Every structure is written in structure tokens, then in C-alpha cells.
Amino acid sequence: MTTLRVIIDEMLSPTPGSVARYTEELTRELINVAPANCTVEAFVSASTETEYDLIADRLPNLAKLHKSALSRRELRASWHHGFTKIPGHGMLHAPSLMAPLRRHDRLNRGEQIAVTVHDVVAWTRPESLGSRQAGWARAMLKRAEKYADAIVVPSHTVAQQLEGIANFGDRVRVISGAASASLRIPENIDERANELDLPQRFLLAIGGLDPHRGIDHLIRGLREIDEDVVLLLVGPEPDDESIAEFLAAEKISPERVRGMGTVSNDDLSVIFDHAAAFIYPNLDVGFGMPVLEALSFGIPVVHSDAPALLELAADAGVVIEREPAEGYPEALAEGINRVLNDAPFAERLFYAGQDRARAFSWRMSAEKVWQLHADL
Image (tube, rainbow, N blue to C red; front, side, top):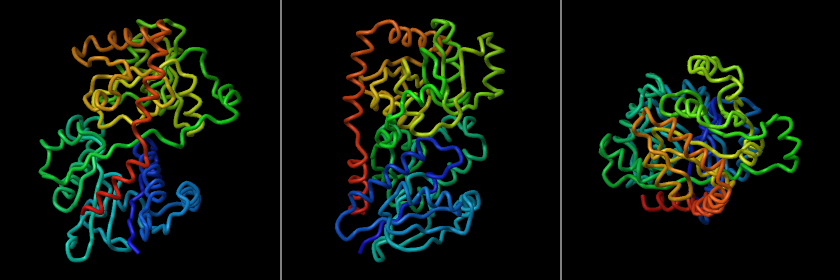
């Protein structure tokens, strides 16, 4: 029996986002499409019983869950410094850079390690992550350069960007993600929409004022959009002081922007379904999983011309040029107004988005991962 061990710690991230959903969706499908005589085990840092139950519920048929004695922070530090012993042997797949990278014998013992690099923000915009997180990512990539047998990236854009950062040779493999299968409109959608108190007309975006997200440009662009249109931000809490201070400094009504905090998959599905448009103004991105999820709902998507987004969305969204930076807010507003005021155009985006989203599937991604390990 051949075993593939997957590091699923990102599933339990204190700030769940695209990488958390990627980890869960990929691992579930790796289990579903496992070749004959192959099983999938998982490894996770020390967690609560509630979190272990969540893993059991979301990853049924997982052959075994290895539980570290170390907390997430301790485990990250341990692997950062090269203390990497974990249970089992053979194939190991990490859906992020959080991996026990070490010297191993692939040819004689069949040991292999594949890690995933979702973006290069730690190199292009380190201030967005903070010095500690950016430093950790850079250090782990150096360990990956030395010890990893394969580097999985979600787009050809990231593959090209990595060429200028590390020497991986032919070890890089492009395997994209897909829209989260966990995002489904619940049966009580109207009830949930009322409880969320959704505005009549609203735009949806994800994230706060981190420099690489471009949310500051989007908020400035609200000046050029009808006042009855509200911007909902998933991630920031309703009382987020940084958002309030930014609105005050820009002299924009606090009623125009509302933080939603962290929302459940069901609630995010309801918000996607009711949004007039999804806006993704990110200045730097490796894939853009939220864009793909919005496209799968048929929501008109307005996004930046970041190369990875052009690769992902093709012609299914409204592309906004990031340069010149001083004109970016107005350019975003122009694209948004076209979606809001041109119903036939928005309808074309509805069908184009769903068609584009169908080009990606977790089954295809999982099959490529199994093939990658078979090739190794």
C-alpha cells in the first residue's frame, strides 16, 4: 500500500482564506481520486478536539490523521530551523510552504517532498505581509530550493516569477486550483440574506488595507459611483479602525463601506449571490481563487491587470489597468459603473464567467498531483 501524506495545517489557519480552502479542497479530492492501493494520510499541528472533529467531517475517508505535539507557531519555527521529523515515510505533499523540508533519499527509499508556492508577495511586496511572515516565507523557499523534489505553483505567472528568485530548474509544475466546492447557496438563502442585512445594491471585495490588495484604490473610486451602492469587505470587522480612519481621511461617508468580518461558507455564498459585482483590485497575486469563485456564481467581476488574473479570468471579467497608479481609483470606478449600468453587458459576463469557471476542477488538480508524485 502506497501512502501520500498531506500537510493540512493551513485548513486550521487563524485567518482562513484562499490557501485554507485550497488545502481542504485539494486534500478531499486527493482522497477521492486516489489510485488503487494508494491512501491519503494527513498531518496537522496540535489542535483542539473541535478542530480534529472538523477535519474528520470535512475530509471523510482520510486514512489517518497524524497529530503533532507542537502548536502551529512551534511547528512553523521547528520546520524553519530544520527540525523536521514527522510520522511515516514515502510521499509527502504540502499545499503551502509549510513543510518539513529536509535531506531525504528519493531514489533508494522512495521518499519525496512537494511544496506549493501560491505567490511571490514576500519578495515583491514584503511590507504587505510584515517582516516576520515575509522572512519566514523567504527562508522556507530557500529550504525548498535545497530539498524539495517538486514545486507546485497555481499559474504560469508564478512559475515565471520564481525564475528570478530561485533556481528550481525543471522541478516547477503548474497545477491550478478551482472554485471551492464548499460554496453552495443554502436552502434558507432569503433568511440568511435578511440576517446578514445585505444592502439593496452592493459591491463585494475581500481583504483590508494591505498595500498589495488595492482596497484603498477601490474605496477612493466610490466617489465616482452612485451613493446608494455600498462596498462590503469580507475580512475586516465592522468596527475596523483602519478602515474608519481611512474613510475619514478621504472624506468618504462611513455608510459607503461595511466590514463583514470572517464569514461562513454558506454566508459567503449568499453574499456572492446577491452582489452586483465582485471587485478584485489586487496589485499582486499568484492565482486569484476568489475571482474564480465569483465567476462560478456568474457575478460580474472587475479585476486588475495583474498577469496572474489575466491568465485566470481570460476574457470573462472587466480588466482594469493598474498604471498609472494615480488614475487607478477612477479606472476602477469606470469599470464598475459599466457593469452596474449596462444590463446586457453584465448578462454576457454572467455566462462568460460560468463558462470560464468550468475550465477548472479539483478533480483535475488532484489527478495532476498524483501524476506528479508518480513521475517523481
